[in-house]
Image 1 (tube, rainbow, N blue to C red):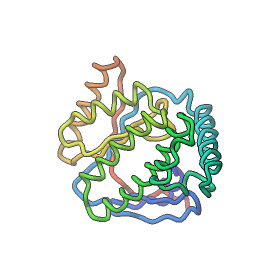
Image 2: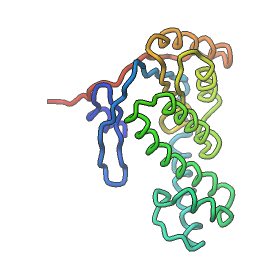
Image 3: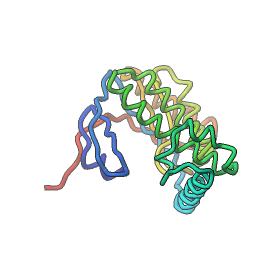
Image 4: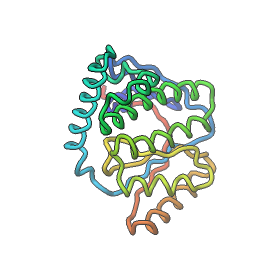
Length: 214
C-alpha cells in the first residue's frame, strides 16, 4: 500500500486499492482540510512478529467458519451478517480478529462513498471507528498511539483520527479542518507530552501527486 500511494498518488485525492487484484482508483478528497500525521516516536518493535500472529489467527478464523458450513476462502469473502450468525462457531480470539477484518472492509467501502459524496464528517467518524476496532478487536494499537488519538479527538477542528500502519508504535493520521491544523498540531504535541512525557513529531500535510523516477 505504501508503494502504491507513493507512486500513484494524485493531488487532493485518496487512493482506493483492492489488494486482491491490485485494481485501484482515485477518490476525490474534497473540502478545506489537511492531513496531519503524528509520530509517536516509538519504533514498531513487535510489528513483524505480531503481524504474523494476526495472519495466522485470521486463517484460523476462516477455517472455523468453513467448518461451520460457510463457503469462503478468506475473511474478505465474509459478510457481517454471516459472521454474526456463525459467531458461536469461532473461538474468542478468532471472532475478534474476524470482526475487525469484516467491519474494516465495510468501513473502507463506506469511506469511499462518503468521500465521493463530500461527507467528510462521516468519513472522520469512520476513521475513529477504525481506530477503536484496531485497538479492541485486532489489538495492534499501543498506549502511545491511543494517547495520540485520544488527545486528537478532543481538539477543535478534528474530523477523525486513527493509528496507521502495522501498529505497536509508529504514527497516527488525522483529518483536520485547514484553519485548525496548526493549532491542532501544537495541541497534540502538548497533550502527548502531558499524558506520557513523550515528544511527538507532527506534520501538517496534504494529498499530493506521487513521485516517479524518470
